[in-house]
Each structure stands twice: as C-alpha cells, then as structure tokens.
Length: 272
Image (cartoon, helix red, strand yellow):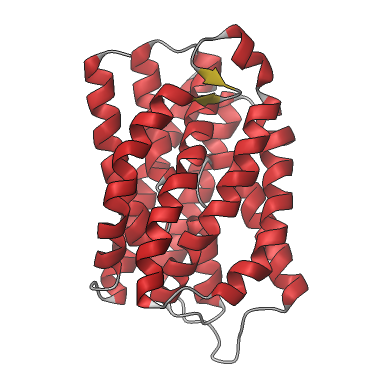
C-alpha cells in the first residue's frame, strides 16, 4: 500500500467514523462506494472489488460501533430492550448473508442491490411520513424477525443496518435520536455475524491474494479503524445537538449520493 492510498484511507476512516456517530449507520454505506474507488485505483481484480469493499466496510463497524455506543450511552438514549430483542435475529440473518448468499452474487448484482436499498431508505426518511400514534415496536418474536431481515440485508451491502433499523424504529414511534443511538448499538452484532461469514465464504481469496482475510482486505481495515474510532464520539455528540429535521435531511442526502454512485458501478458491471 503506497502513501497516497494510506492517507486516503485514514481520511475516509475519519469521515466514516463521524457519520457512524452522527447517523447511526455504522459508516458502512459511506465506506463502500469510496473503497470501491480506492480498490479500483489500487488495481484489485474487478470481480473482487465490490466484495472486498463491502466486507472490509462491514468489519470496520466492529470497532466504530463500540466507539459510537460509548458516546451515545452517556446520553442514555440507547434502547437496550430493542437491541437485545433484535440481536438473535440479526446474528442468524448476518451469518446466512455473509456466509452463503454474499459469495454467490456477482459484482453487478451486489452494486445494484446496494443502490436500490440505499436509495429507498433515503426516500423513506425524506418523505417524513408520520407513523400511526398507536404503533409500537412488535413483540420479541416480531422484533427478532425484523432483526433477521436487517442483518441479512446489511450483509449484502456492508452497512451497520442503520439504513433499515432507523426508519423501522421511527415507523414504530421510537424517537429519531433514540433510534440513531440504538442503531449504533445494533451495528456490533450485525458486523460480527457478517464478518465471520465473509471470512468463511472467502477462504479461497485468503490463499490466492496477499492481504485478504476471506473477502476482507485487512491492510485497509487497519487504516480505517485507526481514525474512525477517534471521530465516532464527535459524530454522536453532534447527533444530539442537531434538530430532528436537519438530521433526517442529512441522512437522506447522504443515502441518495451513495445510491447514485453504486448504480453507476452496477451499470458498468452489467456492461454499460
């Protein structure tokens, strides 16, 4: 890894860590498009770039989520009851996604999948549709089932689940700031389950290419983590200072930009 690549990764980690704390998204959705650019620049094989970007992004969330959670916990806004209810489903969904389905999908389909789900999440957040006042989080079984879906889909796009869990909790009348904080805590089990899956499903890559741990490119992971864990608390602090409307617009704008880039990558991969 050359100096320019290292500097880019350190800067990217700092921005992603701040976004993780601010928006409860684990930083993954921000990382994937930029890691795709950097791995392309580095000359990584085309059929591996998006897989490596997603897996490396997800694994970094193991560290940024812990840093972000500490900051949110000081505010007392994490809904631990929701975290514990979702965690079993998240682990099952993440292992299934990262350990089986992820390796079977091509770069083109992974890119398209990322673009569609991230774009939809941005639209859902921006339209600001009010949930029914009587709606609440489902029971233990329903919440765990939602966690399984979030863990599975997160594994396919390399994100900490905030792009689904935050809108879902807001839809169930959880206050936005509490939803962001709780989503940050959910990032750890999502990242853990999927990271294990990426290592197992990508064992052939570990043998064939230096620097790979399954589908995870560990030199980039180390560089990202160094700065992301330092900036995540600053993002969490800012999340509690911004008004709800502003937080939603920032969240939606970021998602739209990332969806557009990955849609372009999908178009390229499909032969456009």
